[in-house]
Length: 136
Image (cartoon, rainbow, N blue to C red; front, side):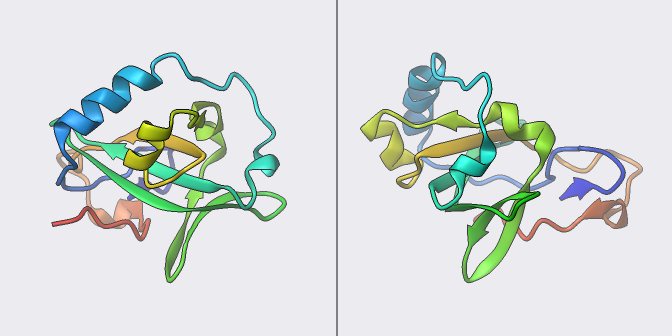
């Protein structure tokens, strides 16, 4: 979930892929960044949202990037689309390594975000529903 009035990270509970796969992927990706891109060019491209929690466990959500003229969405049919917020655009990275692409479910691009538990004293009503569910 994302806080309605700020750009807070989604709040989810963890389950992970194999840590060895994730560790290999992290090492390979340290040198691949996009300084600037026209996000409209991502339209129709395979895209993965990679979430990592405070315990260093990860989950990936695969879909197709869709640009609707004003917003970038991760289309995950039949599940709800997930909006990629503009403040995250500079963190989108290309996927050029075939082995890493397999770990990220065939994506050409990915966005990695960090998530955690709801801050103490906040209610779920203060956050927008993302439609993302951490696998059990």
